[in-house]
Length: 316
Image (cartoon, rainbow, N blue to C red; front, side):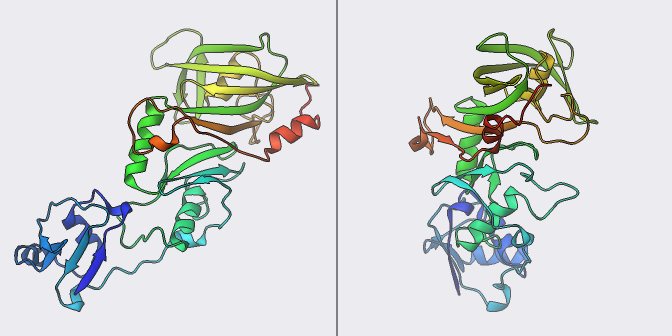
């Protein structure tokens, strides 16, 4: 007999899918048969294959050990670095300060070390996530380009992922960036509007002042924090969230970011002076994460700020 307590990561999963994922040698026909015979129970009661599991449910399987052998897997995420700059953590989410140069997700060249893999390793080593038992894998609700640093939201369970995604979509998660743009802005603050189209093949975007076919509206609000040696330090609030929006929008109005090899003066692969430094949760609706309402989180020790103060950005 095997007894399993359902974790938050598996809450919301159908019983039959959980069993077939967990037990490698369990034939589907045998599973259905044993459920009918009441040799598989939830909370000591009869269950059905399509029954939804809840956190804390006790699953009992009165079967032979040969079919209750659990899958054994090798976990690639254990190769990832253990370096995580955690700004905030609770039972549902992690807020991580991603450093410039680190990927959020695997790509074709770098598969094993990225923020997702580091989060998985962190939760696995703390005993908060069991990948061989949980159908849910920790994941990110937002992403930041490799060469941009800043705060990413990692979700520990399906409930929090759904809640965060809903709040991001409804603009109840406010994102603020710091950047260093070339030249002096004409206004101390302004809300910019334009239209953007993505070129998937070249991973570039184009910005137009007019609404054209295939273009989507973008709204970018900036506030000047400081000005030095021909460089403007800006706080940016994204009112829409499009690919490369800040970089392309500021370049479009004649103020590209320092270090931007795609939309700025530099050519090639550089690290743009851009950092997602602050998140504000402004929930207007009920949510499992309602306790985060009105909370503000900021990244610390941002190299961009230090470089600006030391005059490393200079418009010659």
